[in-house]
Amino acid sequence: MTWSMPRITTGTERRLLEHMLDRNRAELVAVVRGLSEEDARRRLVASRTTPLGLLKHAAVAERIWFQHVLAGLPESECDGGTTPGDASFEVADDESSADVIAEFDRACECSRAIAAELDLDDIRTHPRVGDVSLRFVYLLAIEDFARHAGHGDILREQIEHPVEEGHRA
Image (tube, rainbow, N blue to C red; front, side):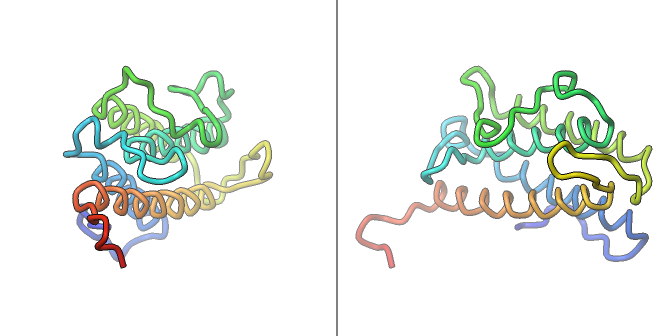
């Protein structure tokens, strides 16, 4: 990760959790910024994973965990939908990188507003996982987004610096 945001290393647990989550959110967006529309949609691995698809998936995760689980909205009322599983990586042909970045930014803003109304130990029930706290959701999102930002870094490296055939280790 390139850590484009300044680093906060002290403060309350909540401040540190929120900051680390925002840094990972920023890294996911950084994976896509500056790529052509074609490159942002390039599949370089067997799965449906693309740089833009990672960001689309992260927007779905934001809505599921913050809007559906923490705020208690029915999935049908979550802004932008909650497509589960591999389908959450799919970007429609008529969606641009700017559209997906804006969708992710909106989901993050909504998540921040929902989280601001909760304490770290407030409990909600996930339909499959069971009881979860805001603290758990923060940690889960930090872990998930850091992993996906790493995937995105590798995809971007493959796009920007492809290895020529015959020069592979």
